[in-house]
Every structure is written in C-alpha cells, then in structure tokens.
Image (tube, helix red, strand yellow):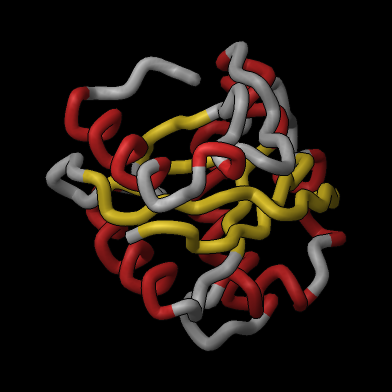
Amino acid sequence: MRRLSEAQAAFWQAYLETLPPEGRPADPFVEASFAGPRESTDELLGLYLTGRKTAGSSIEEDFLAAGDPLPRVGNFWILLTSREEPGCLLRTEKIVVHKFYDVPPEVALAEGEGDLSLDHWRRVHRELYEPHLAEWGLASIADATVVTEYFTLVFA
C-alpha cells in the first residue's frame, strides 16, 4: 500500500471493517488522488457516485516518465474531493489499452462525461494531454497509449 494521509488511511480502514476478515485484501495497492484536474474533481466524483462514470483513462507514457507503476486489476483508488478529503473508493476491475485514435466509443460511454460521444472524449482528452506530450517523449497525440481502467464503486 502506498503512503496515505491519516484521513485517507482512516477511510481505507473504514472500508476494510465492512468486510469479513477472510474477505479483506491481503496485500492491496491503494492510492489516493484527484479524478482529474483539481477544479473538475468534484464533478467527476459525482459521476462516479451516481454510477454514470465507470471508467477513467490515463496515458501510459505519463506513468513511465514519472516512474509510477501501471494500473493493475485489483488496485484500489481513493478518489479525493477538491478539498483533498476521501470521496469514494474504487476498485479496478478491467484494463484496456489503445492508441489515442483507436479508443472505441465504449470508453467514452463508460467515462460518462459530456454527451458521452467519442468526439467529446477525444476533444477533452486532447486538451488535457497535449500540453504534456514533450515531457512524455511523444511527438503527437496519435502516439499516446491510452490506459483505460474500468472501476467498481466499493465504498463511499
């Protein structure tokens, strides 16, 4: 488990207490972060809490450049509010990987944002990712590898 703040660790412990001892994960990977840019994280949190948003996408090259591990099925994510308080706990159930322009419409639908279209998804994610391409060693958004995690809301 990665280092969590006291409030995040208490939130994780509250989740564990809802499980029988034999159902608790033995060696969990738990991280805490915003759902996206801090100014939109509360809106995104609301989409997860209502079930409209069941997936989120990142760029593989971002993980590699930062030296962070790639997401794995079974990971847990404490989604933070804009005030850095725990908002909900998600578990990664499935991961799919595509080049940016090969992302299928199902990903846009699962991400639950805007009009749910692939055009909207591409526009928003291009705006989010393009400023960082050089630091990730990418010449074009077309070269970016999108890692989409599908989540289950397990605790709120």
